[in-house]
Length: 300
Ligand SMILES: Cc1cc2nc3c(=O)[nH]c(=O)nc-3n(C[C@H](O)[C@H](O)[C@H](O)COP(=O)(O)OP(=O)(O)OC[C@H]3O[C@@H](n4cnc5c(N)ncnc54)[C@H](O)[C@@H]3O)c2cc1C
Image (spheres, rainbow, N blue to C red):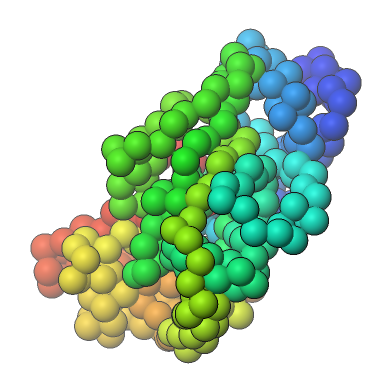
C-alpha cells in the first residue's frame, strides 16, 4: 500500500477499499473496478480532501450512483458518504429540516406521506442520496428539489466547511450553479410549502405511475439523455425511431421507456458508449439533433 493510502487509513471514521468491484455502488452496475473510501463523518472528509489535493489525486463523489457511469478501470478515488442519521428526527413534523447529504430521498418521501408535506411530492420515486439529488437538481414533472432547499453545507478541497444560501439562481434544469470543482455537499436545510392532506395520495399515485412507465426492476441509470426540449422528451424521439429494445451485448434500450438503458447482466463501458453513439447517429441522421447526456460520466 502506498504512503498516501496509509495516511488515509489513519483517519478516523474512514474505510478504504482497494481494487474492488464498484458495480454495487451504482444502480446500472456496469463492470468497473477501482479504489473507494467510505466516509462516515464531516470531520473525516475535512481531513481527506486536503490530502487528495496535496497528492493531486483525482476523486469522484458517488451517492447512490443512480445517475453515474463508471469506466471499466476507474482512475479516480471514489468517495462514498455514509453519515450517521438518527431516524427519530423524522418522527415529528418541522418547518425546516437539517439533513445529512448521504440520507436517501426515500426516507423523506415516507416522511412527506406521513405528514402531507406540500412540495415534497416533486421527488417521488427518485432513487438518490440528498447530496446527489441537490447536485443534479433532481425532479419530476411535478417540480424540482432545488425549490425546497434553503441552505447547503459543503466541504472545500482545502477542507473548509462552507455554507451556500440558495437563491432563485442556484439551480436550473438538472443542474446546480454553486458546487465548485472538488467541493462535496455534506448537508442541507430543507423546507416545505405547508401541509396538505392530499399530498400523501398524490405521492402514492405518482409511485404507481412510475411503476407502469419506467423499468424500475432492472439495472439502469435512469434517463440517459437530457430532453432536447420540454415538449420533445428524448424517450419519445427514441421511440419514434423504433429503437426501443435495440441492444449491444448485455445492454439494451428499455422496451418500456426509450430514455432508459437496461443492463441485462454483464454490460460494460464500451457497450454503453457504442449504444449512445448509435442512438446519436440515428438522431442526427433523422432529426439533426444530438442528445446531451444526463447521466454523469467521469472526464466529462
Ligand atoms: C430508476 C431510476 C429513475 C430515475 N428517475 C429520475 C427522475 O425522475 N428524476 C431525476 O431527476 N433523476 C432520476 N434518476 C436519476 C438519479 O436518481 C438522480 O440524478 C439522482 O439525483 C442521483 O442521485 P445519487 O445520489 O444517485 O447521485 P450520483 O448518481 O451518485 O451522482 C450524481 C452526480 O452528483 C455528484 N454528487 C453526488 N453526491 C454528491 C455530493 N454529496 N457532493 C457533491 N457532488 C455529489 C456526483 O459526483 C455526480 O456527478 C433516476 C435514476 C434511476 C436509476
